[in-house]
Amino acid sequence: MSAEAKVHVFTAMFEANEDASAFGHPHWEPEPNGDASDEEYAAWQDRNPVWPLKSELGRRLDSDFIEVIWKSGQEPDWDYLRSRLHDTDVTEIEKSGTSANTFVLVDQTAFGEDEIELRSTTNLTYHGSYPSLR
Image (cartoon, rainbow, N blue to C red; front, side, top):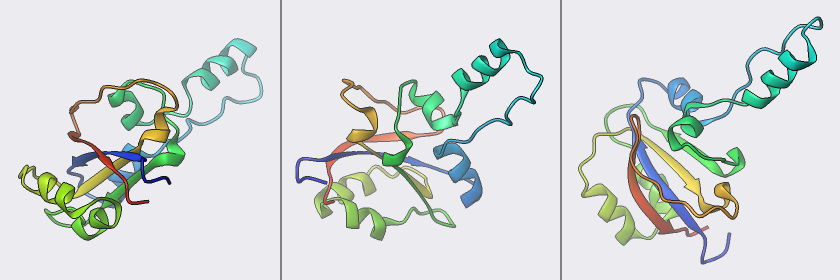
């Protein structure tokens, strides 16, 4: 990643790593059986893959550029975030006092060429876009 690369930082609270992963990573519904009509199969393709993160952000995303970092307890993995962002940016996020145990990091590349304006959602607190160290 170039020095100009940006990463969007969200925090969230999940009960378990599996919950965080299911929220932040795409999955496919079971494929229709062989006797499904062409229309049913096309509808299945159109709605897959699905994942709550994409639904909440309401935009096209490339899942290759999303990281979900879950940590047991009431604090997210600040050391991991320090490996991605400048210390001053991490300190700014820490001062928000948001209760969380998960970071959802979305590299700007995930949005392609789209102009984006992000915000907090039902499950995510948006902290902003920061220069990425990698």
